Length: 379
Image 1 (cartoon, one colour):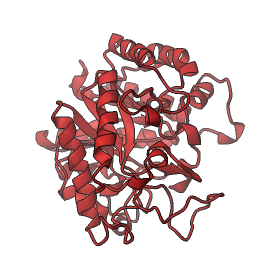
Image 2 (cartoon, helix red, strand yellow):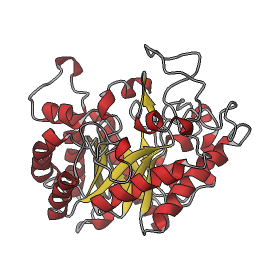
Image 3 (tube, helix red, strand yellow):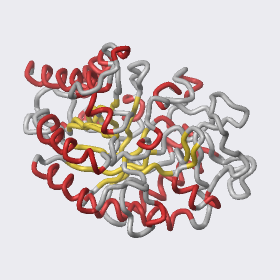
């Protein structure tokens, strides 16, 4: 799954609030919840840049609301004018006033708004270290791994993205200040911590993590974040790939784990929401998460045909399981892995790549929500 990451604008990667959004429609919250639908529907995209804000708010009013999207996840990362750690701000970032405009637009349509900051992994991209490790290099899990002038994969260091060391005594004071501030600004009851594609964890050269069980390290970090949020009555959401055995399943090292973190699935709190993304095949791992007692959302990206199958699977899962299991199958989330600007340009036909054909995020978005509507009306 390397290809999906290299389509992302480097500056927008960790701006969930800036552009990357996932659309979710929460079935349980729908007035038509007794119909056969995939429960909730979500949308996830990077948070828009300030200059894109008005167009994005128009998109909320005219596209998300009519499709009854009930949750919007914005990948913010450092695309916010943080007061707690202004040294970590992007050079161009959303102001508190900008965020309140997003809050107002979503509240008008009863859309739940959730921010994301990538925690643990994704602390670099290609040849660039992102803000946290650039400002606080002492948090780096692998300081001996130097960023290349030209990034290629595979590489001798196994470098995909850097991670912070979860056992560094100073890291949580910094990241939790960011988490609390962005959650307060978004007036939200949930936070998405990312935590996908963590390749560097428990590294042999780390003086704190060396020799530690990688599954326990990953689970401990999930639970530490979860417990911090719970103190403020907030829920944790994460991507689910590190909880899947990529070797045994054949799913691979992108959508699954090759470094044994998958055993953490039995060690994390059961109220963590799992966002189960599969972009190259419509793998049915939602069943796996649900049988482990975890609530799960299925997440397509840019293949409309797969999104239709995944939506139909979600409905079938909810119809064919016990009442206890049914509520764990939470619905569908459209993910967008570009900046908000390029997605909006594509969606509105301002700038379209003719070589993409049907396999685009905007087409997948339209198709998935069209299938949700069709299934709801058919029942």
